[in-house]
Image (tube, rainbow, N blue to C red; front, side, top):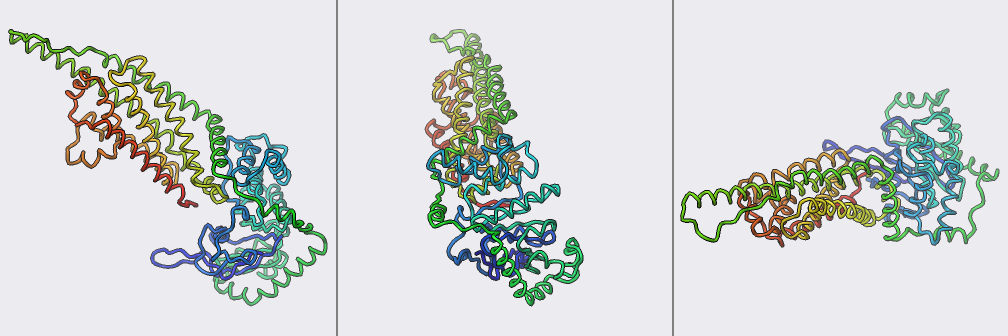
Length: 576
């Protein structure tokens, strides 16, 4: 049984406490199907989230099977299923793949036969078997609602919370979903609570909970709703609520509460006598259900990587963009490579007796140094900035773009550590491929005039650093648009703040330099040049260079700090 005793949820606004859920007290027995209805903004979704543990109650207590959730911890992820208003499946995946991934992330299956059996059972329960091979993006609204339910049923939750799963559906699809929820409530004593704004098909529910301004103003059998509110049509209930304030409705309800509770008990006894509820599980089956466990860390990581790979290769736009970047960016660099391959004349070993000849020789050497040095410095920075742009493209939307689904999966038992590990592994593959291809391609058409391995290492590190930093931004921002915009600005400031083109004033440079990844990759690569070429670059840049070892350490620190920030953002709840 689920029981709420004077449960409240309050927020503080303009220095005042505002109750969004106000002293809600209800008792819901096993095998019960209840609708939570009320006008927009009355607290329906807030109440559902409070029951789920997403909103910490400000007062009162919640009980589940005599366990005080307020004191003894929230539901286990295997006990509860939560179907939000938004889609919790990825468009490029098929129905079968979506359910398989949900199963692998939520339930530890001992073999493939057990996994297939669980998937097939859920497909049959929700009627999705005939369309299991269709991609999510081609499903209708009703089919997506069924898929959301299927992905929650993989763990056999004893409490199923549904938030507006019928919104936006045609009348036929709406009735089918309500009927499906009704049937699910009749299995294994499952409680199903459904938030809905619609007042259609109420006869399929066991009870109706009406909220008004966060207060309970009715909880009873559907056939008593019109009688209680003195209306002839159910659609008149919401307008009737405006006839007096919520507190008066709540006080009135308190007077009639017990009588309606007895009506629901009588109805339930009649339903049980008519055999509407199937026999309870035998002890062995119950023990098996209770023995379900969450999958391990490595199992979740493997599932996430496999799913991310499928999504990546089925997104043609993203694949073409990656191919275009990998091909075009190195070509852009090689267009200017000829300027960096010129010779730098040396001073003659014998001193000229002719002053004019000495001046001409010095001018020629300086001219060669300026031409080659500026070209090499520019090409190195060009590579660094392009790889920084690649890093931004890699991860700016990686977490923020799927944040709602991630939050839902985290609620269902996904470990943030497994999620972060899967992102790091996937992005590491991209970073290695992009960086090494850039280094080898440019070197093939114009040899790097220094230690190529060290230069390739700096390109790899700057791409990794920018990828990690933008991943942290993506983890901390609430929307993908915010994360993308901030990441673009970050890359845009890399070139002017690096000092490779124009040196910054020393009093500013000392504060900005530690945070500019492009500077450390450029500086380290310049220090890896041959002596003569290094001198040529030094002759045309005003910015002081840092030791190679320091460049490695700072870029490594950028990656480490960014991953820590990503971890903080991934752990922090960001439900809308």
